[in-house]
Length: 369
Image 1 (cartoon, rainbow, N blue to C red):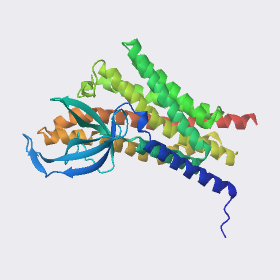
Image 2 (image 1 turned 90 degrees about the vertical axis):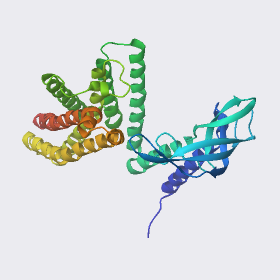
Image 3 (image 1 turned 180 degrees about the vertical axis):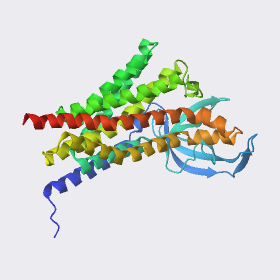
């Protein structure tokens, strides 16, 4: 017989009520928006029209005639007609559906007021996804998961502050500003999740060493080859100092992968030492290397999969518009490959670094006893 604790019932009720409350609030918050918002009450869809470009790429377009009821502003309750055109690829547009809430812009044309589609209202979806993430973290990890989420939010705020500082100060050498932010990210995340402890200090030291060595070796290799074949100017929106921007972005990505590996190794060795206090430094070091070998392959594969996912759409666009594979790789993939390789170097170096530091600290505890 399954016994259900009273506390579990209360938690389930609170979770469900919070979800329903958030859904209701975000579904009835039109008054919060300054831009005019309307709900689609009828949709008339026209026929498909096939279109081709100069490279013989084929797509189709469809026109929609939408009737909407305005939900806010001085025209609340009024009904208007809005047109929308979407393509089969949906690269820069989208198909609108009955019951969907959309933002509109008003125009005066020939003394007549008309409205055009601006963008969709998505706050309900975003809020419910955030609620689901928080609930899953709480169910699986309890307050440890909530602390992890809080550290992500805190790091995001800090990152925005440093971006604002970079814009305000207009520094020539802004890489070191983001290097400082990386140190703060690391320290804050570890303290919030682990608390200020010896394990936290060992993990922090391992991450800093692994990241510094990985980035340093990557920079040295690029300097040694005179950056041959690497086009920093291919970065999106890079208007000045693209090389610094590239290494700042590489540092943030490298930090994430190194932190993942170092945290796993250090946490495993600390748990191992607690369960088997008789283990020597050498045994701990070898155990850390074994953990590193187990996680290194999946981590590096994840890096390359993320890289492929980021560049896939742009690479297809280049190839479909008549460019060669070599040219496409050089201008859409080369920087991602370099970043992945530098991250791979960082992972390889943090395995012995984290293992050695953990073995030294834990072995020192044994000597003191």
